[in-house]
Amino acid sequence: MSGGDRPGTGHRTDGGVASEIDRIAELAKRRGFFIQTASVYGGVGGFYTYGPQGTPLKDSITDSWRDLFVTRQGNMEVDAPTVMPEAVFDASGHLDTFDDMILECPGCDGSHRADHLVEDNTDIDEAESLPPAEVGEIIADNDIVCPTCGVALAGEPVEEFNLMFETNIGPGTASPGYLRPETAQGIFVDFPQLAEYARNQLPFGVAQVGRAYRNEISPRKALVRVREFSQAELEQFIDPETDEPPLDRVADVTLPLYAARQQEADDGGVKSLTVQEAVDSGVIESDWIAFYLGLARDWYESIGVDMDRFRYRQHLPGELSHYAADCWDAETEIGGDWVEVTGFAYRGSYDLDKHADHSGESFSVFKQYDEPVTVERPTVDPDMSELGPAFGGVAADIADALAERAGRDPDAFAGETVTVVVDDERYDVPVEHTGFAVEEVTESGEHVTPHVVEPSFGLGRLVYTVLVHAYREDQVDGDDRQYLSVPPAVAPTTVGVFPLMDRDGLDEYAREVAGQLRSAGLSVTYDEAGAIGRRYRRQDEVGTPFCVTIDYDTLEADTVTVRERDSTDQRRVPTAELAETLGLLRDGDLLFDEL
Image (spheres, rainbow, N blue to C red):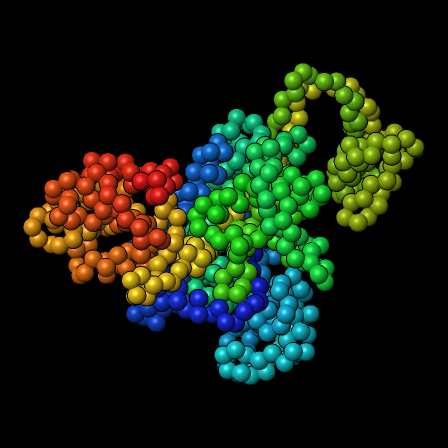
């Protein structure tokens, strides 16, 4: 995801909370949040179907993300294909570096993530940052066995396994392609056109929400590690010399930070700093990363993440992705593990430089100066009639090297000869044959290759986090109750409408009310089956924040009973005001206690 791009999980910190995961798994299947795909055929690891409760929950979280990171920030959004040609991922580096550590059991032939075996059986949190050889030594030193069959794994090779799903575009094998492992590359390859849409004015952001695919070695923990997942990514293109984020908007937001220096210290731990304090002290080096950490912090809380089970963790040097100069993960605690739900990476100009080199196209923007400026530019005009006979087939390459040396180190041309390197060979060229000169040039602007700041959100992991963190148990009227305390704004259903009885016109009235609420844009479920208490429990269990009951007083006074999920408190509300009242409650513009 992008992630984060390379999401990981820490070791279990409390085996006793495993039941939390079991409860969510049972609830998710029974109530339709998510289920194993194609289970009638035995299923396949790493693929899940979102059910009738999980789909609206995921959509609500996505819509909330889009509102904050696209609409309110004034960014663009695109929707690129999920399959792209091999050249894209050759340029991006994914074909060479997008690997995990695999270890195959000699007993049952099962494949395992070697770093996960280490994390599950030792106190090492981030084994992914270690080299494969060292991971293999740790497995041997700790007598780690296969979790499937119990055979000892000491001495088994730990190898790199590329996670890309390969396919062919069109018939035959002449046009290899890959399922994208992140949505970001669909933005980068179309940067020249996107820059035009932004009128070549930096900074600008381009967002994308969509599916990504990784051929995980050992999918596990439900929605935490899967082979198909949804990302919400933003690529913020900036001029690294001049563009600054609006840091004042988030300067006072307090962040729970687990920096690299704290992870490496014996007594290190999470440290709470405001965004401004983190920047001033150098804990967060990039103002842009700090801005997005601050912007996202309150958003996580708004969708139902328990902030007592949340932190921002900085990547250690050994676990940084191939493109990242710095990266922080938003992590949530689930079942005793710290799980990455977002990666905030400073990608520099890596991606745009790579695609420019491989495609031969320009991936820069022209930055217009306020007024033309006159500058001195060193130039060369090699005399090829001299260089050709002297250097033969490498003469043209030497001419190119002279131009590069003149721009980088003009003082090198001060002597009688200048030295350049071509294919690791040094060549001494008489300066008189280089045509070296320093000219005054009037320029109206310059070409700038933007740097990229990327917040990458894993939507499935956020859905899973919200379910785990929202789960509650209590007793109501002496009966055990399970409920999901999800914020009303992201709940799968906003309101349940019930007739107290399915007779005496109560059911007709209730159906009419349900229809009116749907017409007002509210998500409504109608239920008349069973005792009213059971109907409340069903809605509590799927997180419906409000229930409306049509009773006999409704027929006389045209008011209804509105019940709030968490407290189970009830209020009478005029039917004519019901839709507006529920809308205000859903959006947080009215508190239930204020009714």
